[in-house]
Length: 310
Image: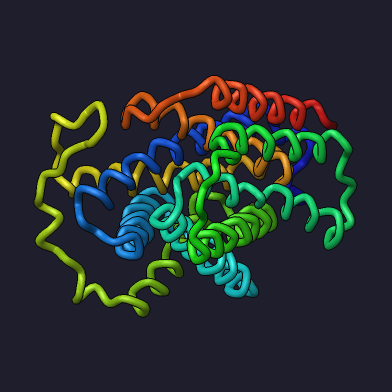
């Protein structure tokens, strides 16, 4: 945030951006589950489509509207590699692997250890003062998410799934911290564009496009749950995932870091499990218990508490 004057920062706008990003990610979780379970596309392939599609659309838009924003500056490559590969590519890979082995709520609970990691890094590495309210908000958030997923129900956790979720937490923290530093030098949209470029190259090397199951894209699949009678083509769901599930929320979260610190953006992003629970109930017909409702309120209270810390 050092690249912006205090008068240019608008905290309310920053929180609104982070809230919107979290909500879109929550919807995208349901859409992605529909694609994986009904469309037959593996989690790694889904991530490859997500990153490559996002890069192509962003690059085309910026190339027409603001080509100057795509110019690389000296010394940016290392930062972009960390942001694009360790942040964008790995956080999605680990997350999809986690939800393929664990309940989505459990995967999110583990992933949202990330705000704790962000706060610890800010305190220990950057020597920034982290107020007590932030720590209290982090504790409340994790408690609320535990209530949301009803962690006490005797779940048998898959070891690889837990490892993937922990990897998602670490890489999500890397994404937020690297983005916070990067937006001081580069606008958020071009930053995300370059991040997706490097993530796309990573995936193209790991699993070449020549082996992509193209025949699955034209198939129509059931939307599952309460929308089981409805069907949509896989290509349309993939398009939603790329634009509203990827480009818009990642750009919004990166942009929010121009107005609020990384620790508060990370806590605000914890609204995702709340929204995911609501969407899972409304769309997939999953149960919504009293504990889950209390958990949602606790997470919201934690976000409000974080916002009140100066």
